[in-house]
Length: 159
Length: 159
DNA sequence: ACCTTTTTAAGAATTATTCCTATAAAAGTA
DNA sequence: TACTTTTATAGGAATAATTCTTAAAAAGGT
Image (cartoon, rainbow over all chains, first blue to last red):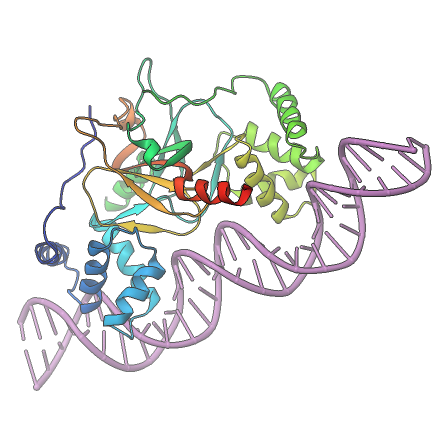
């Protein structure tokens, strides 16, 4: 089974902003100038900006915006699937098992699970053009989501 | 071309510690009780421990060890390829391009480069057993290494 | 225009990580 | 074994990234 991610790009900025507004409505998130401007900034950038970088850019339009708003908004945008967070969250975790394997990282509790490829299975291929970028030292493949334990816990609360 | 990582596991702890000592010698890193204990801790754990967790565990054997030593040592062990850092370093970066693509992250300058799979190429397969772990929300594939710009810069210094 | 709920700014607080400096321990050498 | 040089360490201070707290402001429905 191949990985597929939704293709929501290739549209112009205005269209994406409209789509974003719709999404906000559907989630009953209020459409604020801060949210729109943060979205525009990330949507326009190809630089994988940090929160600070987004803050600096948005500040030019909204001089009073706070860094906290940027963090909060980026987090909610990630949650909504509108932006992708490159890399993992704050705390580093280590693994001394160097046999080829990957990780399932729970977005709720932060737990890290090993995923060992099944017999004959090999989930990562090296892209052909990888040398254009540099010398690869290692490969990090993470599947991020909600682990079964956390899912069960939320189900139990709902009851 | 398939990804292959060195297989250095499946050996017992003592053997791994001896191997680690050799590696230290070859890199003229001194063999200290702190290093050995930190290595033992990470090598024994299947919990992907954080620096704090390693600190807490090592402290039982070496009550005066400092957290800084743990951080320093884990970093040098990562550099030596003895442990793997799960996830990226501290600063979060964002990407609003949701078309399927991956990233090359420079371990030196932190720059993030997009890698779009070539025509018909699809570097990530979903592992068959993924549902055992939880519900996948997204996939994060990073190739980490030294980008060409940084490599060029270091070459220039050597001249 | 009014009311309710959500969002915000501002700054304080927290968390993770790194830096600084004097001391201590390792490895090489006589 | 004692001596020397180099590297690593503890301890605490400093920094960087992120999150929390609170009162005020803005959104969206009525």
